[in-house]
Each structure stands twice: as C-alpha cells, then as structure tokens.
Length: 119
Length: 315
View 1: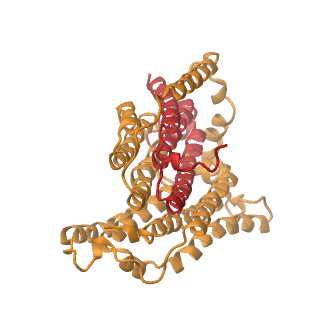
View 2: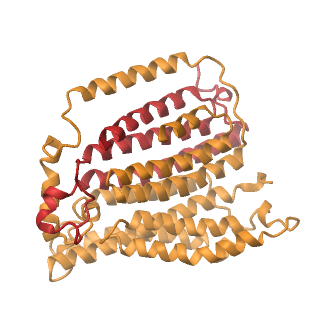
View 3: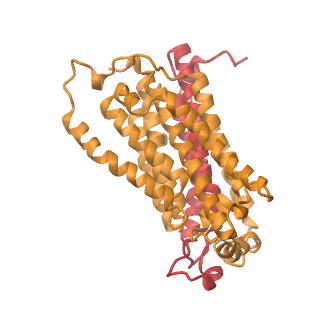
C-alpha cells in the first residue's frame, strides 16, 4: 500500500513540477518547480526499492545477519537517492546563482524580460 | 498533504510563502521516506531540503525581490504537455511487475548479493553506508566531485567578497541588537555541531554519514551567520580557510583510493588498508566519509557566504 501511495505521489509531483516550470514566469518559481520534480523522481526511485513487510537496511539485534536477506529492503536505491539529493542541492545552488546573475543584468526575474534568445 | 503543499507551491503568488512552503514540503517528503524505510534518505532530505535549500532560496529572494507578474496567457498548452507526459509515464508502468514484491526482477540480482555478503565483506551494520562508501565508492567519489564543482561554479559566477562586508540590516548600528536570537543561537550552536559530528562518525552503525553530517554542520554555521552577521562569521570560519578545506575533502577521498592501489589492490578497495580486510573497510569508510563530510560542509558554507556577501540591497 505504502509503495503505491509513494509511487503515485512521486509521479504526480514530477508532473506538477513540470507544469509549474512551464507555466510560471518568474525564474525563481521555475527553480522551485524543478526541485519539486526532483523530489518526485527521488520518491519514485525509493519506492521501487521498497518491499512490503520488510525493514530498513541496518543490521542490529532486531535484524540478525542470518535473516537479513528476507527481512530488509534493497539498500542500493537508497544510496543512490541519498547522493541524488545532495547533487540536487548543488544544482539548485547553481541555478540560483545564474538567476541572480540574470537579475543583476536586467533587474528582473520575469522571463518576459529576456528576449535575446527568442527569434 | 504533500500534494496539497505542492499545489500551494505551484498556485501561490507570494514568493516568500512559496519558499517557506518548499521547506515544509521537504519535511513532509522526508516523512514519506521514513514510511518507506529509507531512513538515510529521509535524514538527508530533511537536512538538505528543509535547511540549506530553503536558506539559499531565501537568500536569492532577498537579493531579487518578491513579486511575480500574472501569467500572460492561459496555461492550456502546458496542461496538455503535462497530461501527455503523465499518460506516457503511466503507460510505461503498465507492464511493470507489481511493486513491493520480493520476487520482482529488480530485487533478484544485486540486492541479495549486497545483503548477504556485505556483513562479511564490509562488516558495517548500516548497509546504505556500505553500498554508498564501499561497493559504489566510485559513484560517491564522482558525486563528491560534483558537489565541489558546484562550489567552483558558484564562486566563478558570484565570488565571495572577503573585504569589509556591506552593512546588513541585522548588524546595522541603527538597528537594535537581537538578544533573544543571538543568545538562542549561541545556545544551540554547540549542540548542532556536536550532533553533526555524531552523525558523521555514527554513519556506519545507524542512519547518517558524511553527506548528512556536512549539511548539518553547515546549517550550524549558517545559523550563526544569520544572527551575528557575516563579519563575525568570517572571524569564526574565514572563506580563505574554507575553499582549501573543500578541496582537501575530495583529495582525502581520492588519496584513500590511491592508498588502496599502492598497497596492491584496486582503486577504492579498502580491504588492504589493514591486516584484517573488514578492519581495512572500516578505516577506508571512516576516511572517505570524513572527506565527504568535510567537502559538503565547506561547500555549503561557501555557497551561503557567496549569496550573503552580495546583500548590499538588503534593508
């Protein structure tokens, strides 16, 4: 059940991020929309690795080594998503830096002010 | 709830509310990650999304202004694009096996291998750490480099003003001092930093590790910077020290890998670092997690400095 909820939420978040990035005119809003979509992708990835009725991939007294294969979930997607989140932050920082540089040039973050790339 | 927050983020006009909501949104998605048994991921999402990312967005917001114009046209075409994309996504999942079942193809190959052999080969109770730092050490090395590259990019575009910083509203001589904030942040600082160190070195045994610890450490410094101003923060950790340290973290990671190579094994194979392969793995993971933590903390603080030192328009 949980995995379906998470998977559906992930897809919806991706689509909402896409919608937000397409409709908004402020570059800052577009960046926020991108981070929404980013979280959606992460959610989908983690829910792919989820298995019903199992527990987090940490061995301790509650999960002895012998039963580990049948008791814990796949650690690989989690390791992947963990780094993806930090990379996402790096990307967000880069996008914000560019947004600020654009603002310095034009004094506005509205994409309607940037007509040089249109033809 | 997550969906409602996301709708609000998309619909609201006030940029400040949007930035604040995106912090709440991150915390909510962290709770979903906990429900999915991905504690490490939830930890990272909470620290990164609700902490640093919101701070950076706020920093940009302060620099650029709060207003957004009304959309010029009806969002019909974007809606169609989104619906088509959604339909394609759903169509793609139709012939996938049921999620969450242990006998899925995705669970048949590497996952059992890691789960069965990592206690013997790596010996770290937290398997996310053992996959992240040992089995997939190459990837994590690359990701640390990416974080470092993000810093290089931000510095190349913005730069950190190191001289006399512009007068900021919160340390402006005309402004009354903020004793409550300053005392509280002084009180919280040691615990935040201590917690960061705990997360750093307990990452082998529980949720945590270099990425989370670096972000938490950086958020402690950022809290100090916000309440006391850049000049005091520079007196504590100067950007001159930070940028070599960020590079040092990446180099420590690489050096650990090369050390394994010099001792007669593969790059980033830590088994040869000690007489007992499992001990060697432990040392290797500790070293590279420290390198990751160092880099991430320094990069986050530097990026924050870069945004803060631009704040002439503040106030």
